[in-house]
Length: 262
Ligand code: NAD
Image (cartoon, rainbow, N blue to C red; front, side, top):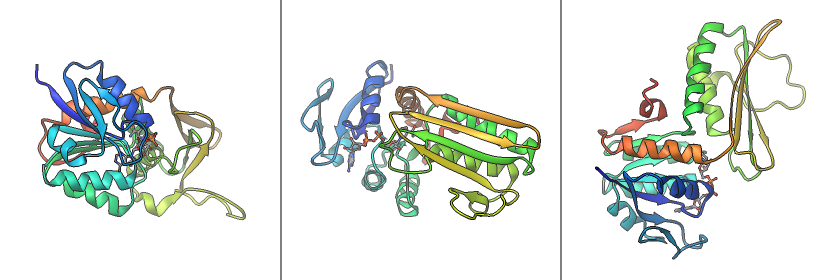
């Protein structure tokens, strides 16, 4: 059996833990390093068979075939820049990137295969395709709004997944998302302009992630939605991406590529 060697970044995090758990059930994947930042909980702890959590990013990247990154935008950009020297394949699930962070990932994708996805779940990736199809068929006369709900600790808003859904709607209509987006409404905002795509972020409790795309017509409404009840679905998808990306040529890919949905 061909084994893919993985380095997991952020092993003490919610997603890092889910990735380690899901990988333990996959004999074709082997964790060879786990890397966290100085001061992270669990440094020095055993995270996988014979692997101890450390801060040595250079060693972790050198030892693996693919690194899996669910951390912070700053940490992801730093890891991508470090991975250029060893042309390391990457699976990146961190969300909330600025253009500068994105440039670091784009530079890695010039020399190595990189899967970047705001949501690694199979169901959600299917939903992204479905909302694009709905937008294409319904056209801009049906007002499109996305509502997303996440746990109280989530740092970025709207969620990366909500933005992926919104972009899919814009693509389905053949418009530039930035020209029609509306991320919040407050006060005297006036009537809803035609063609606007709205996104509302709700935060609270321990909600893993819920997304609903509404298409509001005259006398009728369509709602397409997805609810995640465990983070493990994202980890399972990320590991599927890790097996897939190890054999690809350099470039930037997403889950639509991994799942053959494009
Ligand atoms: P978390 O805060 O629980 O974990 C973040 C981890 O990153 C921690 O272990 C932290 O120590 C580590 N970290 C911070 N700086 C680091 C550095 N310099 N080097 C290595 N590790 C570092 O967060 P979380 O809930 O696990 O989410 C992490 C990211 O993944 C967020 O951006 C979140 O939005 C995203 N996420 C993506 C998906 C998806 O499917 N793409 C699903 C869930 C969460």
